[in-house]
Image (cartoon, rainbow, N blue to C red; front, side, top):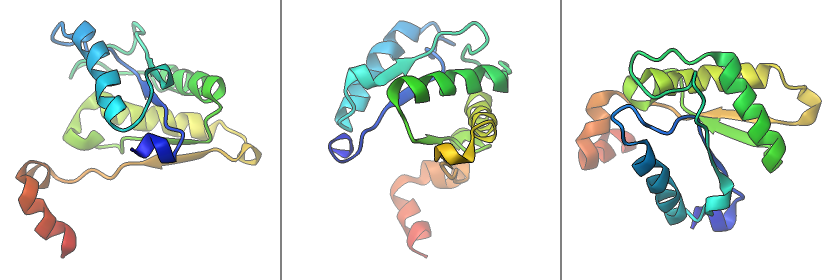
Length: 139
């Protein structure tokens, strides 16, 4: 598993409670992460009043940057991977994560050696074409 090769941690900035499923989501994340070899004690789920799940929620960069700073320090993390501005599916919370991580990274001291990475979103058509996407990927 990926977690056996790398020290992976997950910071989830919301309980995913938009549809009242927050408690279910809290249980799903460790089970899913376990498939990648990420132990439950390496997962932090944030439940902050300004970071509530929803298409109309405007997550403040500073609140995200604070959560990232705390996780980086607590877990002694060197590299952070986040969504890009599009956030995979255009979800505004995912895009906010990218902006918050960028704000965190901009405030770090280059001598500390932190790195920040962003996943690259594909268009919705490619995302939902599944197996056919392999053709696009190899071209």
